[in-house]
Structures are given as C-alpha cells and as structure tokens.
Length: 149
Image (cartoon, rainbow, N blue to C red; front, top):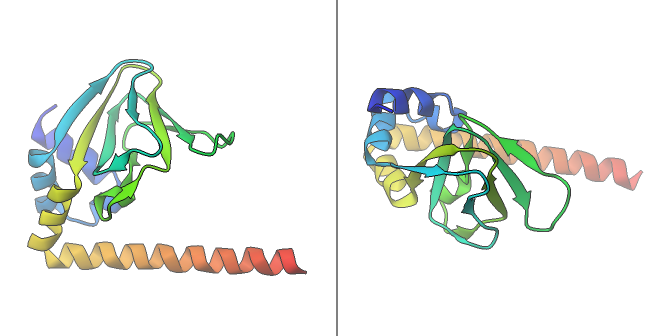
C-alpha cells in the first residue's frame, strides 16, 4: 500500500482521525507494516504493549485474558491496543489472525513524538479520552444504582 492509502485507512479510525491529515501522514511514514498468516499471534495477553495496530486487511480474533466467551472479531480499520499508544501497560487480551492479514504497527514513541509536535492534536485526543472516561463513569454509576435497588 502507498502512503496515501495508509493515510486514508488511518483517517477511518475515529481516535486517529482527531490528529488531522498532517499528523496522520507522519504516522503513516514512520509506522511499520506486518503481515500475518491464519493462526499467527499478533500479541498475547500479558505481553508488554509498546504499540497499537491498525488492521489493514484480514481479521483478528480478540481473546480476553480471563478466558471468558466475550470474543471480538476485529476487521479493517480497527485500532487494536489504543491505550498502548499513550501508556506503558500489559496487553489485556490476545489477538490471533483468522486469515491472511496485515496491520500497520504504530510505536508508542512515534505516536508521542507526533503529539508533542502538534499540541492542538494532543488537546483533541485528551478531550476525546476525557469524554469517554466521563461516559464510562456515568454508565458505571447507573449500573450500580440499578443493582442496588
């Protein structure tokens, strides 16, 4: 894929779209592509997470570390490991290719350099995460209220 194709794919990812085209171009240029065959493991639960991955083609089964049946299938345009872009952490789940697949690997160090070079994009991303956190908090409080009645 060309850089323009990669930028177009990154623009489809809601979180990354907040960065703007210039920053997405830098991400596309600085990122790596990985190809995986059916059954290949992209990452395992418990691995140190130093990057996020955008699915270019194919699909991945996301398996929770707790072994629960809440499996998710992620296809093209999905960002896997979003929080790993901003904070050091361990992977909470595993991702296994269901078919021939490819991903764009975005290293945390690259992502952070882009945020440092574009304060407006960093603010937009901060505001998005704050809004999500507020919504999650509200949902938890509502669920707690329903359980206690």
